[in-house]
Length: 455
Image 1 (tube, rainbow, N blue to C red):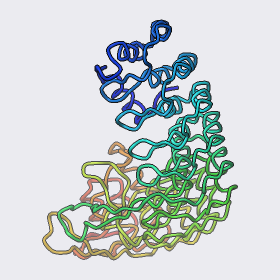
Image 2 (cartoon, helix red, strand yellow):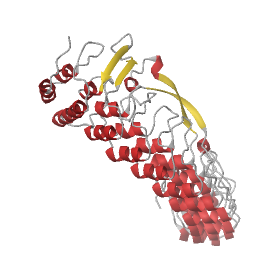
Image 3 (spheres, rainbow, N blue to C red):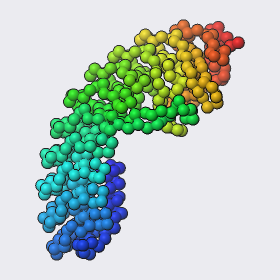
């Protein structure tokens, strides 16, 4: 079974560690080197000669570690019979049991446990054998460890549990075994805060502390789109309205990641489609993704088509992360769909009760402005690219397609009665917006409907 990244780091450290002379003498270090090379025949020869088996490499690694690493259960058994310390740990706290569990090798794990290996020992960072077995999806190993007293509630880095690791790596069978073994479906990871920002990053008001963590296993399922594990967690009593430390609900998190099937599962289990403690509901990222089916699913389960976006969300510099920029705060789903030129979503929202005549009033700062910029923008104006700041190209399209989508979005807004000649704070109309964007087909259409430029 391939090693995970932490497992590869441990293995790399083992491979790089030199064998050093110690109290056991040269032959005892030879046995470590031979075990490291996977030469079980040579190791057996040394065992027959009575060589001490607990010699260590420079980092504390023993021959038993390497037998476990190479999944050589028979060699591990021979070393144990010769007196190898079953719980010997290297400088990182790694035991042979941890290595065998990481590899998911049940025969070696069974032999080590039968020899008295402590299933509760952890790395210095807190990672237990049960955690790495869960992360590897090694169900038989998970069963063996639980049967020998491994604590399913042990906490690793940032307070994460084996259950969270199993969910994060999409191992629903391991999730089921852990729950049966006593894992707490309501356990939460640690909480911490980090100052994060949205452009323009130099503006103090666009920098703030964002809480992180506080995730249950269900939140990990929502983030990764693991429907099977989510179903198992819900059956075990998980709260479908779980939120993280920021207040983002499982449904909103799944919608933000584009996992429509998981959103549907949560909603069918009774999740609140309008949960918005963090300042945005699931419908907002669904619209941002221009995902008509996801928007429809949310509306079918009672999502508010006029829910107002109440906050901006941070973004890493020079990334294409999905985020809500400060100029979008205060917008409704229909207005956002117009600004993102998603005509099918606009029609759907209007059919389900969205107000197409909503005017977005925004106050925000841009790098080129020393004072706050104020805007009053209709959905029609938004469809021509006015308002909302400079949007990031999450779904890059060529100019021809972009203009075609803008034209259809403008047509939807006009058909729904949005005023053609409303002006923004600078006296510009939708026609001015279309001309500025050099969208001739959009400008021609607006003129044909009676639109005029601003004064």
